Length: 226
Image 1 (spheres, rainbow, N blue to C red):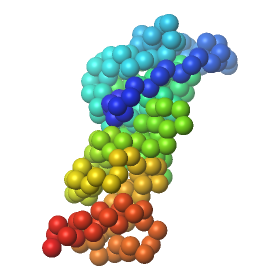
Image 2 (image 1 turned 180 degrees about the vertical axis):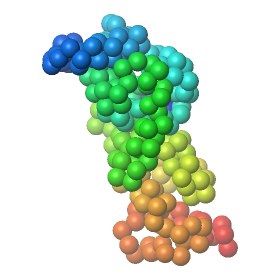
Image 3 (image 1 turned 90 degrees about the horizontal axis):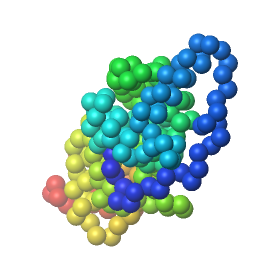
Image 4 (image 1 turned 45 degrees about the vertical axis):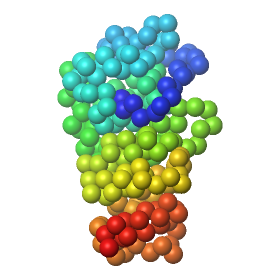
């Protein structure tokens, strides 16, 4: 799981009763859920009834994926995990049933298909927005710090838009006006990478509805290129 937040997320306050008791529709489904639950229990903090950050790191080690790898963020998206660094039993069951992964070997083998699923356009937009929300680790938090934004851009967009991401990160580290960014600014970074010709920027129109931070980035980049 990418350690993109400076502040550790608090564990969910309580475990839902549905985490402890399952509706068992049939023998086949029962066996699948039991196997998924056994896998969950092998990583869960039993006092919390959750897989906590320590359990996530153990899971990463067992599947052979670094905890900073984007695939762990993709797994969190698939599980619809609400708290950074924590998986509830409900989230685990729902996600692993969707992945058809009721043991560790199947989970390892599910990652390529999960990557393909995430990278389809509608899913990727949802995943991209989820990545930002996943970093909102405190109640009523609306913004994410610049350092985390830079790490997240590299993680989520770097493989698709390397040149754009490198330039945006360079600008974010250079500028001093913004210390935190909100969801609208985050979403528009993806829109910029996806829509704007780069590096010539010939179709960028500052009169359109771009956040001011992107207008400033474009001005900075043009000055740098001149």
